[in-house]
Image (cartoon, rainbow, N blue to C red; front, side, top):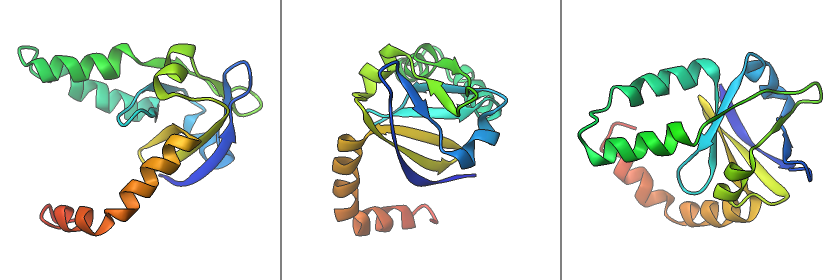
Length: 143
């Protein structure tokens, strides 16, 4: 299970250190892709396969299904963790997420999100101010 918030830097070659506590779960391979809210999603291979299967089952005749599948699947790239616990994030994904040097890796149960630190701080501040409204809306879903 991925939980927590970690600050790491991207080096000039585009490599990002993965928090040590997550490396074992990603050692058998991982997939990084365009996420929502201008971040990247990082999935262990098994979790990625589950998501890819669901995306493949979406109705191709629906425009939103095609668009979401394209975002997630065409934007995806296999990544490996090197001996120093780093992964190389492709340039097109770094541009998509606006990643510069300072990043945040946030654990969200079955995936990690990779954010530019300034964008994360802005997003988090906005979400925290609306936390009561969000909790109330989710209460209707049984959360």
